[in-house]
Image 1 (tube, one colour):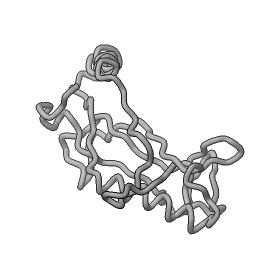
Image 2 (spheres, rainbow, N blue to C red):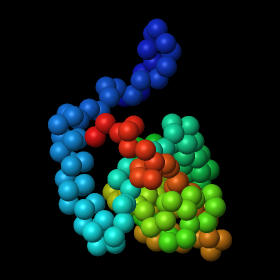
Image 3 (cartoon, rainbow, N blue to C red):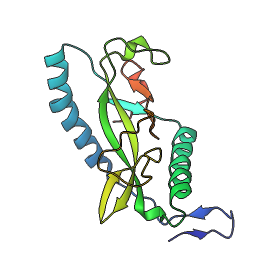
Image 4 (cartoon, one colour):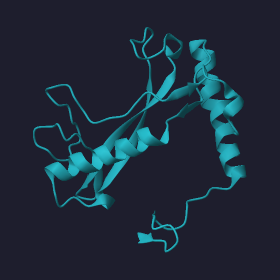
Amino acid sequence: MENKTETTGKTRLGEPNVIPTEVIQSQVDNYRNNQLLAINETLVMNDANAIWFDMLTLKKFIADVEKEASDIDPEVRTEDLGIRFYYAAYPEEPQEPIPAAYARRHTLIMIPTKKQDDLNYDFNPYEESGHALAVSLDVSGRAVAQNHGSLIPPGNSIVESY
């Protein structure tokens, strides 16, 4: 559904996806009043409730996924690629470049996926087999992945709308 606009020449992918603001607020509140509250009370901490990634980082990650997948399978279709977001937590003593203030807090790790047999498998192009695998543990210890955005907290929540 890709097309170019006559005035800008930029590619449009169709209408933007929208969610009513009341739904966004309700779901954010549900998380804060349930999961986040339970985490903070159980672990006696003030866990992150948001993470931010700059646009260039996200675009580069998507481009990297597309390139690496295409290098292995030149016939791969964009609609067969995706990104799985894993909830994760920083260690008690993070190592540089992770700030010490991120200790034990939530984060997201983005992992590429590739559709195979109608299932979206985690995909590691560094895997010897070079295709989508349920478990992709490369012997070199490398995987195409993205992590480390800016967390709130410890970042200032004044920038949040929800």
